[in-house]
Image (cartoon, helix red, strand yellow):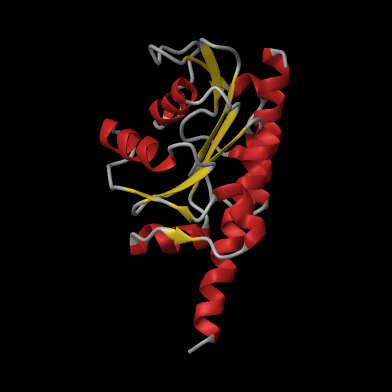
Length: 191
């Protein structure tokens, strides 16, 4: 994809994460790998429903230096770390979705019991240790919890999913959120 196409995709998927209920307001962030040296990320603190392709921020994966007047997401270090460690990843999405947030608040791994979901995430979606937003501690814990998986839960924070492209990363976010909803509701019905 060209840089312009990536910017358009981020604009499109920024709206999709809001419309699907995966984020509220400006919470969360998205990125797509441009090449070995750069990623395009959502800006910090702007309403996804109003974003344009020109609002997306080009960030150096290694130095985290960025171009333009808009600041990139404060979680750019997590996105960068994923791209540095995982050649198979072309897109990263971080959300504060409702049901994944239950596991984040409870500080629990997500045990995967459904065979279809297990094909994507394996037997467990791990919990990353706590770190304040935008810190190296959060970055370190998140990257460790993600490992070779396609998703992780961030303690007291939210979730992160990755994919070969933005479509797959988005689908993985939806799959994990829906799985967490079903898991919680099944446990509630057993009472």
